[in-house]
Length: 120
Image (cartoon, rainbow, N blue to C red):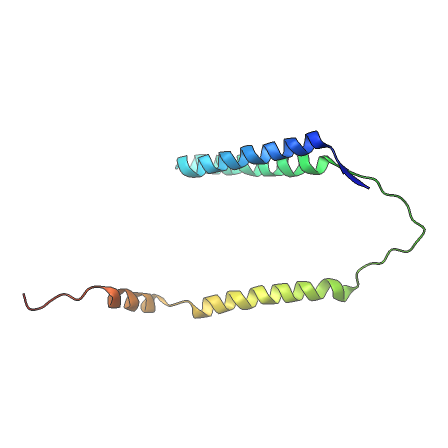
């Protein structure tokens, strides 16, 4: 059985809303590196507080069973992991390989500049 304590779930949501509002305000108004670092630490603490408050709201009651519980095989765990990691590495490599070099970007920028008339 999994149950939740509504007051703590609400408190977790309140912490999340306040933290998001503070992050938005800080992102728009704070410019000093020291203040940004402090705001980042505060936001990290807020996110952790929200998470642990939400997890504290959960009640899990385990009923013992005489049956053997099925588990995942090694292949059921490793295959999705390998496919996900392989896909990420492939896409990242493709983006890096296909991104234009500095010379290509400069050539493109100069080709898009308007032509100066020499007949003046």
